[in-house]
View (cartoon, rainbow, N blue to C red):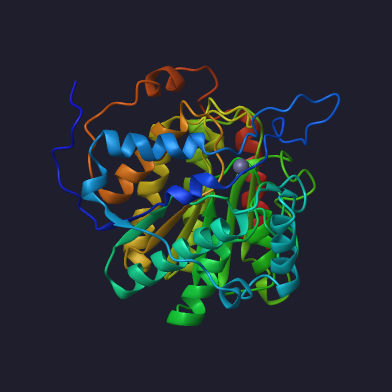
Length: 375
Ligand code: ZN
């Protein structure tokens, strides 16, 4: 068994990490509920372990020295205000100063969470600077807390600030990038990213998610954007049980054609590995090899239209066993590095029944095609 990488990276890939990302404290909640007399205190699903183990695997396999390591800087209020009003920032500050608690909807924080969330946003903005200036080809930001559920005035679904959306705004405002696409493969709907750009034709927001998982009331394929942004929002609400066949068909029939039509100058990937087969919150079926495949397909579009510029921001993923291997697969694809280490779970997951595209999955994809491309 080979434990150390032998090949050099084909790409200069930024690797934005911080020990402080793991110190965001979700308060020992029980799954995703605040403990009480009928809920024993436990471990919140959004705890450091999945990300820390991904980080650890990259170190253990000697991949880290082949990446462009970077310590994030903290985002200022001015940066956060590109999406969030000062009242939202002040609210998070107040909850943190009080010792912590729920900062919005199902989003517990600890005393240091505001400062750590600033590092998550700052890490994404740093990556934007490095990629656009040409120091890096692309980047992976292993940030925490996540961001894609955060709406301008509301912390939601474990997310305080809209990490990827703020990166998009920063790329547009500081660097003059005009057309940007986001492709969110987290198992939950990227409602925050959608809300922020819903009437904005300069940002194509795409979300592949499990139908009505969270938030249950958003993510419908008939939500296509509004006003000037009409046609610049693509939701692909896949049925529970969707695996390799469904995701690959959704990519080939919807994601890639939508990107080709939009011709983005930069692509952001809010990347949740809770669409993997071993996740405790999602009911999808992906293996690590599927994340590598999706990454490569996006890189092909980025090479064609966006000078290869892709920024991956870490979102959900709650299997401490499998997230590290899914993350590693995406990171290997992004960097061109080869960890020369086989995911021990991939063959098991790939052999699960139901990985092939089913009739109901195909019907859904066809309905989304009809709604999106004929809108
Ligand atoms: Zn998620």
